[in-house]
Image (cartoon, rainbow, N blue to C red):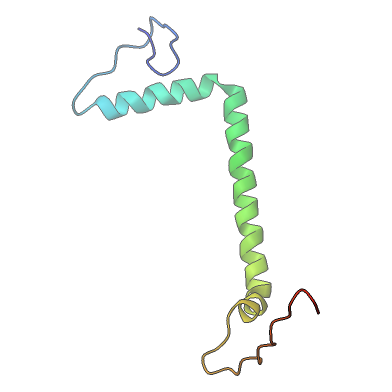
Length: 92
């Protein structure tokens, strides 16, 4: 049997079945491939860990500084605006 994903051949795995059991066969095939690709697994796990830590840090920072950032970016309705300065020309 030749894996359609990586191209390797194996006599131990039966060809995937179509119908109700196709999803299970696909899951088993991907799990077997995942187990044989140690470097890829480690890289994906590292990237997922980095993503999780980054999102956690962003959430903690927003919890601490979110109101200040929002105050810098948004003006409440009805707030007075600063008078606009007249534009300067290149001669000034």
